[in-house]
Length: 445
Image 1 (cartoon, rainbow, N blue to C red):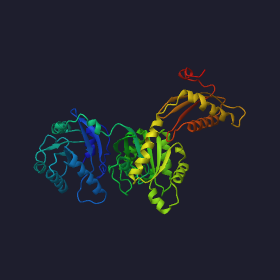
Image 2 (image 1 turned 90 degrees about the horizontal axis):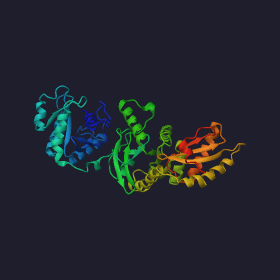
Image 3 (image 1 turned 120 degrees about the vertical axis):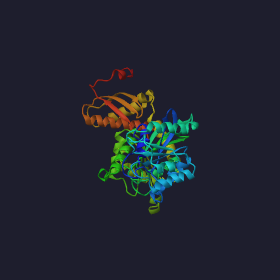
């Protein structure tokens, strides 16, 4: 029908996935947008077909819940074909519920100034608007009508309902590992549709998470399938959106299924997180069902197995549990998330780096089995998010020597301070290389 196309047009950016395949949108997506200076909460929902079961039934239950909460419903129909029985029933239901609504007749390129189809006018009571969401025809008139309908609900705190803002946290992983269940448990509400059908989540679903542990923008992403399993445009678009959300995130929650073990796809996702220098918490899910089969298995053992199998995320925080247990999930993950994000922005005092950290690194350098020992001349923190350190080292000439020194420096930094879940960036300046003037000015006496 073009709901997502209209949503993207009113938002001003490509947020929802648009594809001619019916039923692409399942979870609802929201943004706060400005219509003639009026801030409104705009929601893109899944489609209604009536009488469906299973996944479609879950989609429609959420749609009707949102309809009951809305001050205005925009009901889109396809202007190229006659009104269907289902569409007529939906319009009748909206009238029976006494919900304010407009019927928006889409795909009317070049026809927006003509009279709407008489059967739609009769059912809708005159509130009919003809548009082309693809080309923008009739949008100005629709915006004016939305403004007139909603101006009495003007809310100076409208930005408070926006899903934007907060520290972006992306829940990522393969399809069907429990990402949406974890998303709902962290929020404390059934926000995302949960289904055993792989690929249920398509658009990235965002929701603000506020509490005593901080303010986050939680993002439930589509599962990242193996490349060979991407066989249609919708899956391809969903994969692109997930990759974008991963790049935008400050913290990633990587969800694993212990019944499958750590797979090649899990390792690929882990490498991508590490290459982007993202904070990371690895959550081994479904332990309730696993412990039924193997009651002697400890959660610590599960975490250690996952840590060994994901070498790219050696710095990550590992936890195990059941995403179905909302209270335990919040009790375990929320304080950990707050700690990881705090460490991501942490600055280490210069006297600590120049004191015990530098001395411990020098001692470990002196124990290296080589005749010419490297010497740490300077260690400074250059930035945060991620924490970035500059080490000036004399006595190294080969790349492997530099790598060895870098590993020692990171090991000592992690031993001396708490960096759980946080990637560190360390630049080693070798002998003979030019040191920036800004660094020289900070060098110790």
